Length: 634
Image 1 (cartoon, rainbow, N blue to C red):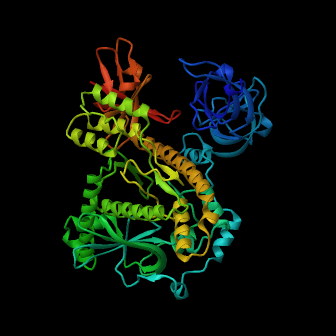
Image 2 (cartoon, rainbow, N blue to C red; image 1 turned 30 degrees about the vertical axis):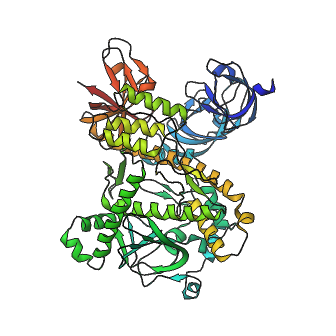
Image 3 (cartoon, rainbow, N blue to C red; image 1 turned 60 degrees about the vertical axis):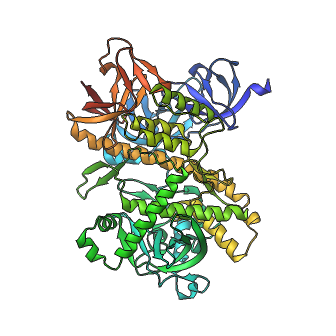
């Protein structure tokens, strides 16, 4: 009987049922119908009992609520004759919250509010009080505040963090003595035009024997932020910086990320450097990882670097003292790209958007362009991350790796069945799957109509990368060892591994004692916070896209089917804006049936499938569902 009892957390659905995600990650999820929830809600920790045996959908019923998961909701307030109700923005939280007039904070119907849940009456809606009014529903600032607030992101730094930051002293000449001095090297930062913090700088030279000496110099945040101080505790809690089109919620206070740690032009800065000797095949022959000091000679932008690579004479003349290094970077980056391709790295071609807002508040959405300038930095960061991870792996010391596991057997089977269904002859090896297999599938499909479709399904097949104290390699990059070393200003794992490396080099402490358990804790926390950051960034970006496309109602666009469901198809435009064509607007006289395995919707005569090119008209915006609605044109 005890084997049928499961502890887990509920993941609700707007239709009123839920899934139980067991605490034991090795177990499968359980479906719980609304009638068996017994008052439990999305986010609650519960004890449940398995209710159906093998051969059918695995279901359960709630026995006991151990802990309420959601104690505060963000939503829209509506007045009622007996009181008010808050309709949660989070659709998984399927119950409205009742708010008596006496604790309604004078909210009006249509206000975006924060409600604290105070009680859970049996067979009734949860009850609560309104603690904050964020603004009016559908107003830009109110909606953005609601999204950010619903993810419980910190708006400000605690007082003790602000006080601690004031104690940090600027880097000075006295601090240089225990560091390798690279200030005479020509180093430069390359970032976007609107970047405010610069955490990586590059130096490069070609040696007489034809090899390259590449220096990747990373801001040494650990020089200031010590393990266990107030700033470190807050950085651990946040895990990562979160970026929005018009703002950022940083991991570190502004004085650190935009001033003391930032590799500003013509200023001495403490760094941790990975200086590598790379041969003509892209192999690292030798390397040195050391605490250092640099003085960046130029704050370059991707735009200007790209202009130089495109031989724009005006830009070349302006940056004459840097051009030879930039062309040398291109030369080495091409070699590294070729080596990664040869080794089997899987580079998916998935559309992404860049969202910008001008001074007047006008929103612009365009497809991200993959240019050479971004590619340079990407290649150098990957090489440094790989080199550092390999170095620490063979030392067998506590560390935080960036891992990307192989696809599961079930997903692989579905993927190869899907390929067979669309006429792609891809033989699966009996001994397992390799990144090279995926790379070859993409290469063979590059000029075919199914290329976009295969990219999308391959992405769904692959696992998500995460942080781990146990190294299992990186499937997507086809690397045995990988880590995140290059962004300690905005990622907590990078800060931790900087400390580990410096402590190892100085032989000060026992790494096992100091970090043995902590790397497991930090990996788990960082992975969870990264997941939250991705979700909230996506939610905010989607809202900006919605505001943008609302100006194009009635206009026609070409697009690609990006999703198929039993209620319609999603279509993605060239700038990666997505909208729904409802099933009732697809014009089928027969019932359309969803074939989830092959990613298509069909009535036997007409078929809509993932990756199919279509033309649509923007029908309108459903602000309630935060979704653009399209009509399919013949």
